[in-house]
Length: 244
Image (cartoon, rainbow, N blue to C red; front, side, top):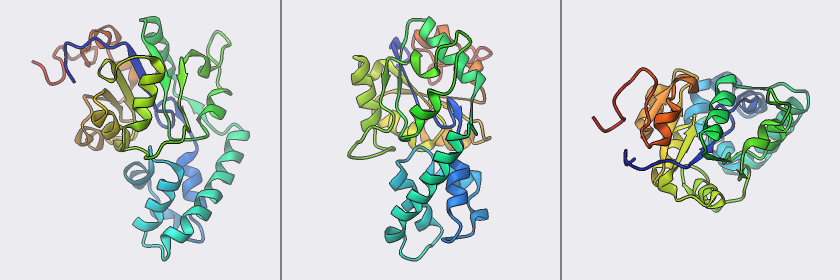
Protein backbone atom coordinates (compact mmCIF):
# COMPACT_ATOMS: atom_id res chain seq x y z
CA UNK A 1 0.00 0.00 0.00
CA UNK A 2 1.00 3.61 -0.42
CA UNK A 3 1.66 4.86 3.14
CA UNK A 4 0.54 8.37 2.15
CA UNK A 5 -2.94 7.31 0.99
CA UNK A 6 -5.62 8.17 3.53
CA UNK A 7 -8.13 5.40 4.11
CA UNK A 8 -11.86 6.10 4.02
CA UNK A 9 -13.36 2.61 3.80
CA UNK A 10 -12.95 -0.71 5.61
CA UNK A 11 -14.12 -4.00 4.15
CA UNK A 12 -14.64 -6.91 6.54
CA UNK A 13 -14.73 -10.62 5.99
CA UNK A 14 -17.05 -12.27 8.53
CA UNK A 15 -16.09 -15.84 9.43
CA UNK A 16 -12.98 -15.79 11.60
CA UNK A 17 -12.84 -11.99 11.56
CA UNK A 18 -16.09 -10.72 13.08
CA UNK A 19 -17.61 -14.02 14.15
CA UNK A 20 -16.32 -17.28 15.63
CA UNK A 21 -18.54 -19.16 13.23
CA UNK A 22 -19.22 -22.91 13.05
CA UNK A 23 -18.10 -23.18 9.42
CA UNK A 24 -14.98 -25.24 10.11
CA UNK A 25 -16.98 -27.61 12.30
CA UNK A 26 -19.70 -27.99 9.66
CA UNK A 27 -17.20 -28.73 6.89
CA UNK A 28 -15.49 -31.32 9.11
CA UNK A 29 -18.67 -33.08 10.19
CA UNK A 30 -20.02 -33.17 6.64
CA UNK A 31 -16.88 -34.94 5.46
CA UNK A 32 -17.96 -38.23 7.04
CA UNK A 33 -18.65 -40.68 4.25
CA UNK A 34 -16.18 -39.04 1.88
CA UNK A 35 -12.94 -39.03 3.88
CA UNK A 36 -11.70 -39.22 7.47
CA UNK A 37 -12.96 -36.01 9.16
CA UNK A 38 -9.86 -36.05 11.38
CA UNK A 39 -7.83 -35.05 8.32
CA UNK A 40 -9.79 -31.79 8.15
CA UNK A 41 -7.63 -29.89 10.61
CA UNK A 42 -7.78 -26.17 11.37
CA UNK A 43 -4.65 -25.68 9.28
CA UNK A 44 -6.31 -27.54 6.40
CA UNK A 45 -9.39 -25.32 6.72
CA UNK A 46 -7.34 -22.14 6.69
CA UNK A 47 -5.19 -23.08 3.72
CA UNK A 48 -7.76 -24.83 1.50
CA UNK A 49 -11.25 -23.62 2.38
CA UNK A 50 -11.40 -20.38 4.38
CA UNK A 51 -12.55 -17.37 2.36
CA UNK A 52 -13.70 -19.39 -0.65
CA UNK A 53 -17.18 -19.81 -2.05
CA UNK A 54 -19.04 -22.88 -0.80
CA UNK A 55 -18.75 -24.73 -4.10
CA UNK A 56 -15.05 -23.92 -4.43
CA UNK A 57 -14.36 -24.95 -0.84
CA UNK A 58 -16.17 -28.25 -1.26
CA UNK A 59 -14.27 -29.16 -4.40
CA UNK A 60 -10.92 -28.03 -2.97
CA UNK A 61 -11.45 -30.19 0.13
CA UNK A 62 -12.38 -33.36 -1.72
CA UNK A 63 -9.64 -32.92 -4.29
CA UNK A 64 -6.96 -32.26 -1.67
CA UNK A 65 -8.06 -35.34 0.29
CA UNK A 66 -7.94 -37.48 -2.87
CA UNK A 67 -11.64 -38.34 -2.81
CA UNK A 68 -12.56 -40.21 -6.03
CA UNK A 69 -14.85 -38.24 -8.36
CA UNK A 70 -14.30 -35.07 -6.33
CA UNK A 71 -15.99 -32.86 -8.92
CA UNK A 72 -19.12 -35.05 -8.98
CA UNK A 73 -19.32 -35.26 -5.18
CA UNK A 74 -18.63 -31.60 -4.41
CA UNK A 75 -22.22 -30.38 -4.77
CA UNK A 76 -23.59 -33.08 -2.47
CA UNK A 77 -20.83 -32.42 0.09
CA UNK A 78 -21.56 -28.68 0.02
CA UNK A 79 -25.29 -29.30 0.56
CA UNK A 80 -24.55 -31.63 3.47
CA UNK A 81 -22.31 -28.99 5.03
CA UNK A 82 -24.99 -26.32 4.55
CA UNK A 83 -27.61 -28.38 6.36
CA UNK A 84 -25.27 -28.77 9.32
CA UNK A 85 -24.36 -25.08 9.51
CA UNK A 86 -28.00 -24.00 9.19
CA UNK A 87 -28.73 -26.03 12.30
CA UNK A 88 -25.72 -24.66 14.17
CA UNK A 89 -26.68 -21.06 13.37
CA UNK A 90 -30.34 -21.63 14.22
CA UNK A 91 -29.33 -23.00 17.62
CA UNK A 92 -26.97 -20.07 18.27
CA UNK A 93 -23.72 -22.01 18.27
CA UNK A 94 -21.53 -19.04 17.34
CA UNK A 95 -20.43 -15.72 18.83
CA UNK A 96 -18.85 -12.41 17.87
CA UNK A 97 -15.20 -11.68 18.56
CA UNK A 98 -15.22 -8.80 21.08
CA UNK A 99 -12.05 -7.24 19.63
CA UNK A 100 -13.63 -7.17 16.16
CA UNK A 101 -16.79 -5.51 17.45
CA UNK A 102 -14.69 -2.85 19.20
CA UNK A 103 -12.52 -2.36 16.11
CA UNK A 104 -15.46 -2.01 13.72
CA UNK A 105 -17.14 0.47 16.05
CA UNK A 106 -13.90 2.46 16.42
CA UNK A 107 -13.43 2.67 12.64
CA UNK A 108 -17.00 3.86 12.19
CA UNK A 109 -16.47 6.39 14.98
CA UNK A 110 -13.34 7.60 13.19
CA UNK A 111 -15.42 8.36 10.10
CA UNK A 112 -14.67 5.34 7.91
CA UNK A 113 -17.47 3.69 5.97
CA UNK A 114 -17.76 -0.05 6.55
CA UNK A 115 -18.71 -2.89 4.22
CA UNK A 116 -19.15 -6.62 4.59
CA UNK A 117 -17.70 -8.85 1.89
CA UNK A 118 -17.84 -12.48 2.92
CA UNK A 119 -18.09 -15.35 0.47
CA UNK A 120 -20.51 -16.97 2.91
CA UNK A 121 -24.25 -16.81 2.33
CA UNK A 122 -24.70 -17.39 6.07
CA UNK A 123 -23.02 -14.18 7.24
CA UNK A 124 -26.17 -12.06 7.54
CA UNK A 125 -28.01 -14.77 9.48
CA UNK A 126 -25.30 -14.64 12.13
CA UNK A 127 -24.79 -10.86 12.24
CA UNK A 128 -28.52 -10.23 12.60
CA UNK A 129 -28.50 -12.39 15.75
CA UNK A 130 -25.58 -10.54 17.36
CA UNK A 131 -26.22 -7.34 19.32
CA UNK A 132 -24.07 -4.32 20.13
CA UNK A 133 -24.07 -2.80 23.64
CA UNK A 134 -26.61 -0.21 22.43
CA UNK A 135 -29.02 -2.95 21.38
CA UNK A 136 -28.53 -2.53 17.63
CA UNK A 137 -27.53 -5.54 15.58
CA UNK A 138 -23.92 -5.91 14.52
CA UNK A 139 -25.13 -5.86 10.93
CA UNK A 140 -26.55 -2.35 11.39
CA UNK A 141 -23.19 -0.54 11.57
CA UNK A 142 -22.21 -1.54 8.02
CA UNK A 143 -23.07 0.79 5.15
CA UNK A 144 -22.85 -1.92 2.50
CA UNK A 145 -23.33 -5.67 2.60
CA UNK A 146 -21.96 -7.82 -0.19
CA UNK A 147 -21.91 -11.07 1.79
CA UNK A 148 -22.93 -14.04 -0.30
CA UNK A 149 -23.14 -11.85 -3.40
CA UNK A 150 -22.86 -13.87 -6.59
CA UNK A 151 -19.59 -13.18 -8.39
CA UNK A 152 -18.06 -14.75 -11.46
CA UNK A 153 -14.94 -15.68 -9.48
CA UNK A 154 -14.54 -16.09 -5.75
CA UNK A 155 -11.54 -15.18 -3.59
CA UNK A 156 -8.60 -15.01 -4.24
CA UNK A 157 -10.09 -13.05 -7.15
CA UNK A 158 -10.72 -9.44 -5.99
CA UNK A 159 -14.16 -9.08 -7.61
CA UNK A 160 -16.14 -9.20 -4.34
CA UNK A 161 -13.92 -6.61 -2.64
CA UNK A 162 -14.04 -4.32 -5.67
CA UNK A 163 -17.84 -4.50 -5.63
CA UNK A 164 -17.78 -3.62 -1.92
CA UNK A 165 -15.58 -0.57 -2.57
CA UNK A 166 -17.94 0.47 -5.36
CA UNK A 167 -20.93 0.10 -3.03
CA UNK A 168 -19.19 2.41 -0.55
CA UNK A 169 -18.37 4.85 -3.39
CA UNK A 170 -14.71 4.79 -2.28
CA UNK A 171 -11.73 4.06 -4.56
CA UNK A 172 -10.10 0.68 -3.85
CA UNK A 173 -6.79 2.37 -2.98
CA UNK A 174 -8.57 4.16 -0.11
CA UNK A 175 -9.94 0.93 1.37
CA UNK A 176 -8.48 -1.53 3.85
CA UNK A 177 -9.59 -5.16 3.98
CA UNK A 178 -9.72 -7.10 7.25
CA UNK A 179 -9.27 -10.81 6.60
CA UNK A 180 -8.25 -14.03 8.34
CA UNK A 181 -7.72 -16.15 5.22
CA UNK A 182 -4.79 -16.13 2.77
CA UNK A 183 -7.25 -16.19 -0.14
CA UNK A 184 -8.83 -12.97 1.13
CA UNK A 185 -5.47 -11.27 1.63
CA UNK A 186 -4.50 -12.15 -1.95
CA UNK A 187 -7.82 -10.74 -3.18
CA UNK A 188 -7.19 -7.46 -1.34
CA UNK A 189 -3.68 -7.20 -2.76
CA UNK A 190 -4.82 -7.90 -6.33
CA UNK A 191 -7.63 -5.38 -5.92
CA UNK A 192 -5.17 -2.63 -5.01
CA UNK A 193 -6.31 -2.45 -1.38
CA UNK A 194 -4.44 -2.38 1.91
CA UNK A 195 -5.01 -5.37 4.20
CA UNK A 196 -4.92 -6.34 7.85
CA UNK A 197 -4.57 -10.05 8.55
CA UNK A 198 -6.07 -11.26 11.82
CA UNK A 199 -4.19 -14.39 12.89
CA UNK A 200 -6.47 -15.94 15.47
CA UNK A 201 -5.12 -19.43 14.83
CA UNK A 202 -1.37 -18.73 15.08
CA UNK A 203 -1.25 -18.63 11.28
CA UNK A 204 0.74 -15.40 11.08
CA UNK A 205 3.10 -16.77 8.45
CA UNK A 206 0.28 -17.81 6.10
CA UNK A 207 -1.10 -14.27 6.14
CA UNK A 208 2.30 -12.60 5.84
CA UNK A 209 3.22 -14.83 2.90
CA UNK A 210 -0.08 -13.95 1.21
CA UNK A 211 0.95 -10.28 1.32
CA UNK A 212 -0.87 -8.76 4.30
CA UNK A 213 0.30 -5.21 5.06
CA UNK A 214 -0.14 -5.83 8.78
CA UNK A 215 -0.72 -9.04 10.74
CA UNK A 216 -2.07 -8.96 14.30
CA UNK A 217 -3.36 -11.50 16.81
CA UNK A 218 -6.07 -9.14 18.07
CA UNK A 219 -7.71 -6.23 16.30
CA UNK A 220 -7.30 -4.26 19.52
CA UNK A 221 -3.64 -3.99 18.50
CA UNK A 222 -4.36 -1.89 15.41
CA UNK A 223 -3.79 1.85 15.77
CA UNK A 224 -7.07 3.24 14.40
CA UNK A 225 -5.90 6.86 14.22
CA UNK A 226 -2.82 5.85 12.23
CA UNK A 227 -4.90 3.60 9.98
CA UNK A 228 -7.14 6.47 8.98
CA UNK A 229 -4.02 8.38 7.87
CA UNK A 230 -2.95 5.41 5.77
CA UNK A 231 -0.36 3.95 8.16
CA UNK A 232 -1.04 0.35 9.15
CA UNK A 233 0.68 -0.22 12.47
CA UNK A 234 0.04 -1.45 15.97
CA UNK A 235 -0.03 0.70 19.08
CA UNK A 236 3.39 -0.61 20.07
CA UNK A 237 5.16 -0.41 16.70
CA UNK A 238 6.24 3.05 15.60
CA UNK A 239 7.22 2.38 12.00
CA UNK A 240 4.84 2.16 9.06
CA UNK A 241 4.61 -1.17 7.34
CA UNK A 242 6.89 -1.06 4.34
CA UNK A 243 7.88 2.53 5.04
CA UNK A 244 10.62 3.29 7.56
